Image (tube, rainbow, N blue to C red; front, top):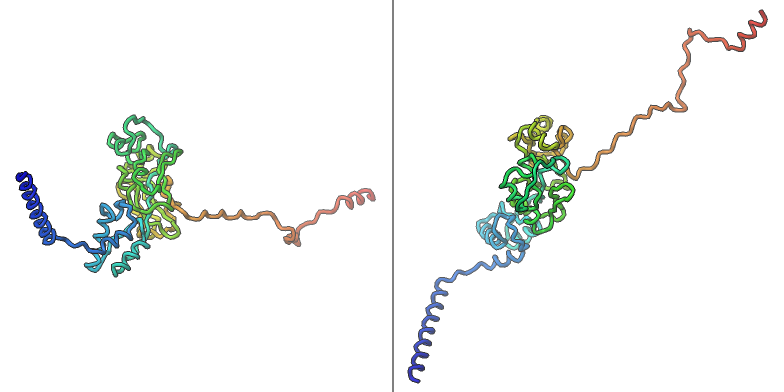
Length: 315
């Protein structure tokens, strides 16, 4: 019995000493967390989409607090929360936030089933990443959309879906937050984040094919052939031709849409622009009250047939 009591006392003493040591170590090496981290984290949407450039909202919160202590949070933006969330964060941290225009994902490929016919059949893992690693895919274009929906799976907001008729992804502008998850998931980088623009209007090249004109045109009827006509007509130097494909810089574009009218293949597109009304046809019907031209003074006037007959009878 004495052995049991002694063992209990020894173990209890060891536990007490260990507890005192751990308590002292925790106090000595304690790291105090800035309470603003939790407050900023509560303001952020908590989507953990990675659109801000950090692994999650906690990383974004830490960067915002650190930037506020340094006096600037320039370059930090939550694409999901947008200006409203960033404004609340700025009020909490007591620092100004630069105005950042909202962005939306655009699909830079118009290679639908009609425009880009299939020349092969893929029988493997139904993901864009797997198909892309196997080669050009099912069509002659090795740069266009593969249509397996990796972008759809990556979107947490249900803002993108595959159109069953065209086989291409379509973005719902109302749901898109501009997080960029779909763009990162696309192995061919055909999805790009662009400014929404005034009234949601945008002009961009719906093609990323780097092949030369004849080859690109053969693979897809609406491919950019790099002819440069759009670049010549643009007065704002917003269009560049690189690797046989045109690109519109949305920071320079003034959306005059002259390039869209000039494009011979339809690769340049404009979104959310009003439809131009057709000019009314010229009315060529003569009016009822239009003045009739008077005969010339020296023009001979033919005698009536009746009078001519009477003269013959008298003779």
